Image 1 (cartoon, one colour):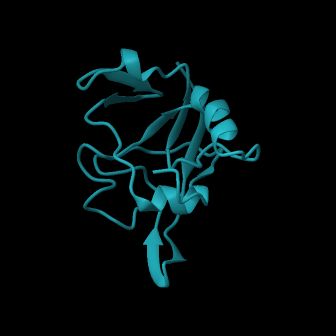
Image 2 (cartoon, one colour; image 1 turned 90 degrees about the vertical axis):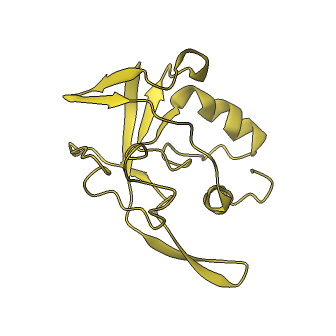
Length: 133
């Protein structure tokens, strides 16, 4: 496995169904080193601290290999890494071979897989696709 992109974001306010919604899903790549702490990556913000960030949700990883599938499915060739709200885009990350409790070394950090990500409506906002969930 190889990290192809490290992605972070600041909280952004968007309008969804006529209401303002705060979200940290709009991740963009950074070339700067990041510091992973117990609750999150320093410099990466989450608006919904119940469902994102915190113990067991400090970092979200997504397989780089899935991007071609989603580009075809969503008919969006411009889909960039970070579009799924992931902190780490990882080449050859295979969910069939990763299990809760597995540990993965990322730089000097040792991360433990704690749970799958459960998509919410903010992913559909980020992908600009109401059908994506």
